[in-house]
Image (cartoon, rainbow, N blue to C red):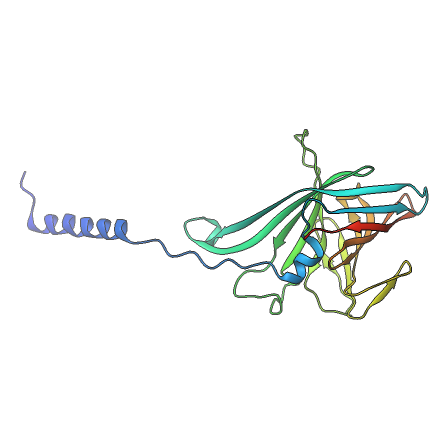
Length: 235
């Protein structure tokens, strides 16, 4: 049966559209949003790093060391798909091991989209750090908790909703004395529940270039504190 001129024109038009779509280049990916240097100073450590803490109750020492560090560029698709990359950002996962408390991982997350930057977000910190238990031989997810917010206003009490807890961070602008030592840039983070510590209330005290210098855990109503004795940092 002969094809009418109108039908032929329609077929030709569809073919042109298909060829044009096939030849169209995908949109270029955006530049990666790099982690702030200040954030890395608090949280990103390389193998060779170790911390030694003393238990305030038993006086026992606990050694914690960095087992591995993995750095990535995460790609977030537009509209929940990966047809087009809308956001790329630098990320990392640091795994640690301990002579007493087992193994943990620390993973960075970005909580705000472009065009927001750290100083422009109206949703809280753009960057948060998750701490979870590392269970290589388990099929179950032990879960984790957000333990570090960056950045928040300094010298301003606030609270944030974490995964299963309320977080009360406080970032000091002035050098602060803690356990007889003076620290600059101290960030105190209080959690009502910490899944990475068995669900108990936990407090962390972070210092740039040193990581966690003190950790407090309330087990069954009793607070126990792990003070930093010494450390060796590789960044």
